[in-house]
Length: 169
Image (cartoon, rainbow, N blue to C red; front, side, top):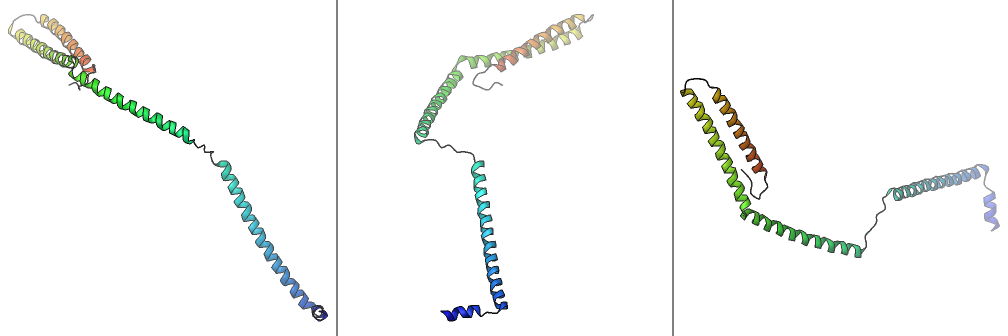
C-alpha cells in the first residue's frame, strides 16, 4: 500500500497539472450538463403552470343531471310531434273550410269587377266619340270609374293578404 502512495506522490509537476486539468474539464462539462438539464426542467415546469392557469375550468355534468336532461328533451320532442300533428290537422281543416273557398271567390269577383269597370270606361269613351258636344261629362265619369277601380284593387290586395292555407294567386 505504501508503494502505490509513493507512485502517486512521485508524479512530476506537469503530470499533476495535466491530471488536475482533466478533472477540472470533466467537472466543468458535468456542471454544464446539469445546468442545461435544470434549465429544461424549469422551462417545462413554467410551461405546465402557465397552461394550467390559462386553461378554462371544465365543469362536467353528473350522470343524473344528464339523464334528467335527456328525459326532458324526449318530452319536448314528443310535444313537438303532437304540435306538428295538430298543425297538420288545422291545415286540413282550413283547406276544407269555406274561408279559403270564400276568399278565392271574392278575389275572382274583384277581378271581374275590375274587368267590368274597365269595359264600362272604354265603352263610355267610345260613346263620347260618337256624340257631338262637350266632353266634360266624360272626364267626371272617368274620375269616378278610376276611384271605383282603385277601391277594387285595394280590396283585392286586402283579400290576398288574408292568411289561409292555400297560396293566393
